[in-house]
Structures are given as C-alpha cells and as structure tokens.
Image 1 (cartoon, one colour):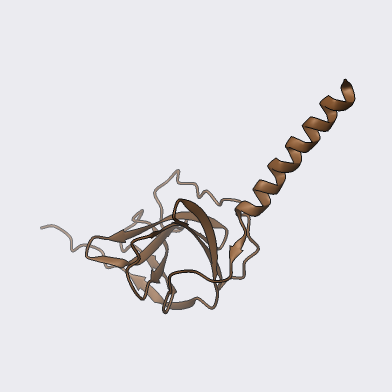
Image 2 (tube, rainbow, N blue to C red; image 1 turned 135 degrees about the vertical axis):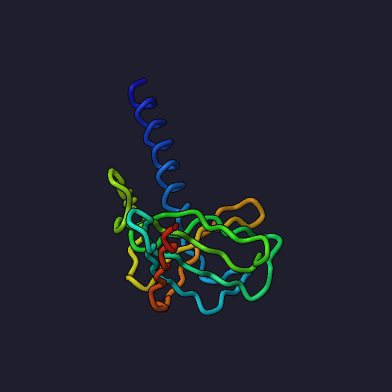
Length: 153
C-alpha cells in the first residue's frame, strides 16, 4: 500500500514539474511582429517625483487574437499596457529607486529567465494559451528628464 501511495505521489509530482517547465518555454516564432523595441530611462524634475525605465514595444500591425501581458526586463516583471490612441504600442513601466519619496522600496522580482541587459521576455496570450517570446538587441534612447513645475507666485 505504501508503495502505491509513493508511486502516485511521484507521478503527480512529475506531472506538476513538467507543467511548470513547459509553462515558460520560449516561442521561436510568433503570430505578431515587433519593430524597433527600445527602452528609455526617466527622472522627474521634482524631489520625490520618481524615476524609472520605460520599455516600448511597437507592433507592426494590431493583433486582435493576441494580448501582450507582462514584460521581464533587468530583473523586473511588470505589466504591459497600451494607450487608447496607440493600440499597437505596448509600454512596460519599471519604477526605479532614485528620486523616490522617503520609505519607497523597490521590489526586484526573481524572474525565471536568464537575460542579458539588452534582452527581455514578453508573456502574451494567444487563443487562451500563455506563451513567452524573447526580444533581443533592445536599444537605449537618451534619458528623458522631466522639468520641474515653475514656482507659484
């Protein structure tokens, strides 16, 4: 009886671990194309206004059957979003630790991918299935420094 219990637990564990390892398998080809993926650091012009890095992922055509969900970049996992007037441009916003209000702590997630500084992984859903795609050679644009508001008189 113990043998069967051990065997069934072993089989269930094996299926669980196989599912976990296949859940993050990178796709070699996707049904969508990206162009000129880049990131840009930014800093606010006021003390405590924040800083961070925005990653821009433009799609060459709007895809109704897919939805880009999350971005894994430089040790962070963040949600991807679009703006209503730019449905083909996805943006991942990583909040930095510089120029933050007191008490701010950065949450560097442990990501399940081994990436270089100019690489990212995008998770997306296609026909109800979550898939992962690696983007290489992400370029950096010059830092964007937002000016502070003029003093009130």
